Image (cartoon, rainbow, N blue to C red; front, side, top):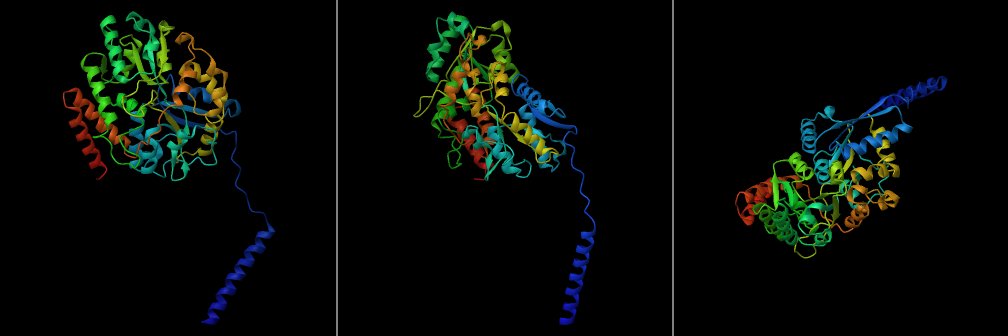
Length: 434
């Protein structure tokens, strides 16, 4: 047995020495280096032509100065469709139909990465995230890795049609630092004097509720991830205000997003309370220049509530199946994470309030916006964003959002707020397996 082992070891050593001797006699052939100027196409899925798509197009122009061989192919994809296609492909374990880069709503990042941890490319060491507002970076941190490049911060404001509220004998300052109850009262005055609705929302969506909740520093889940719906006093108060405004015609409940945009643009409503990205949508109506102004967001009458909130907010993510992960990371690093020029270009027309801190020092934030009567709206947005309460969305945020949406629909049909929310909480707990 020992002889056999000695023979085997001798054979192995001899083979190794022979291989070493042969390798000394010639150089190993190296794989040809990739051509850095070879054509590359990065496909991007995002939505909203006047905001996200516009920003991506401008980023592509800046990057192409250095990398003219890189084509950024932008495919307009509404958020709901994007999320549905993403989940369908990943659930089927077939990421081949997915793009290189997606725009993801911040409140969906944790769920997506947790559900499909190998589907998204970690950006640690590839993109400098140190200069972003860290509350935004935190949305993309999962198990010590960073998966997203922050974009807009979704800070909300009350956008007011000054000509309409002046017809009602009101002024912009009447809407500053107020509660939702006071907003409702002012809305009744506007409706009585002008015949216009004060505001509009997609009827069965919980968009109004989410703005109100974040301003109160609470959400559908508590800090420990427990469901916080049925006994959430801020949620109860917010829904009662919303139902009352719809019932008396202060708020116009519309069927979908397109109808919502139309109601704002065609003068059906005297205000809009939503994210700063509404600047691009509102400014698209050139005949309304000088007829808009902003002030801060109404608050609920609960302890700790602020006159600042957030709606939406999104970040860029790179898909792990991309053949060009490094190019995609370099592109994002040199534009959304590295170009003050980009934010200076997109700010005036889109209202894209940056969470990349160096951009905030740009003189562009001090400029008045002529469409808004010369008001320094970007400076105002920054002030509002500094007051936004931090919240935790939770892994089951979208499930909770959907159930609260059902509750909203039930309430508008006559169900009590308490009964509708009790049902919603029960359904969410069932989904969570509790």
